[in-house]
Length: 294
Image 1 (cartoon, one colour):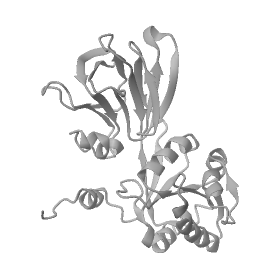
Image 2 (cartoon, one colour):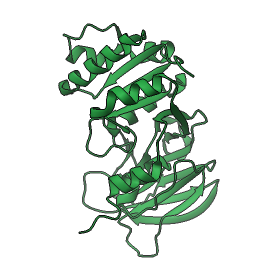
Image 3 (cartoon, rainbow, N blue to C red):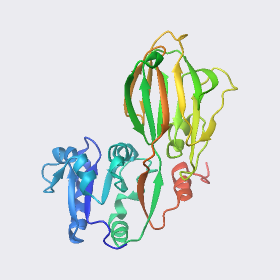
Image 4 (cartoon, helix red, strand yellow):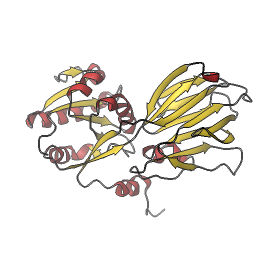
C-alpha cells in the first residue's frame, strides 16, 4: 500500500487562521515524501503566505487520492458532505475540543502521517443520510442535503413544542409533540442524539436511530431501525408556526405547516482513513471519560 496517496488535498477549518501552522507542518512533510499537494481555496484566502497550489472542492475531489482535514469534527462533517460524490478518502487531524472523527492529534502528525503514507492504516466506510425537504401535498422539493451526523426537525424561534407525524417505509408510526426529532446515523449517535438520550451505535452498524427532543410524554423513546428504511416526517397542521430542518448543525431550511422531510441512506459511503492502531472503543473511553473517578 506504500505511496498509494500521491496527490493530497488539505482542507482547514473554515475561517480559522490558527490552522496555518499545522497546515505548514503537513505540507512540508508531504513535499518531503514527494506528494503533490493542493490547498482548499477557502483556507488559501485566509492564509495567503502559504505557498501551496490552490484548488476548489471539486478539483480536490477530482484530482486527490486523499483529503486531509485540519480542524475539528465540524470541519470533517462539512468535507464529508462536499467530497463524498468523488469517493475521496478522508483523514482528520484534530484541532477541536472533542474529535470523534478527526483522530490524529496535532502533536503526533509526523509519526502518524508517515506511517499512513507507508501504507500502515485502516480504512472504514460509513454512510450519510440524504434528506429531501418537500412542500405540502407533494407540490415540489424545497431543497435537499446530505448529512453525516444527523438531520433534525425542530421548532423555530418560538419557545413552544411542535407536532410531527412520523412514517417509516410508508407506515404510520406515531404523532410526536416535542421540541423536535433527531434522525441520526451511527456516526452521529455520539453527537446531538447522545445528548438527547439516544443510544451509542457502533459506526459499522447499518442502522438509523430516531430520538425525540424533550417529548411531551415519557412514553416517547428513541427507536433504532434498519439503515435502508425510508423515513418521512410531516409538519402537522396543528402547529402554530413554522419549523426548521437542520443538517449536521450546519445547514438550515425553513418548513411550513404540511411540509415534509423525506430521509433515506445515501448509497455512496464516506471513506475514512485511520491510523493502523485505531480503536473506536478507546476513543469512546477517552472522549466520554469512561472510568474516570469523580
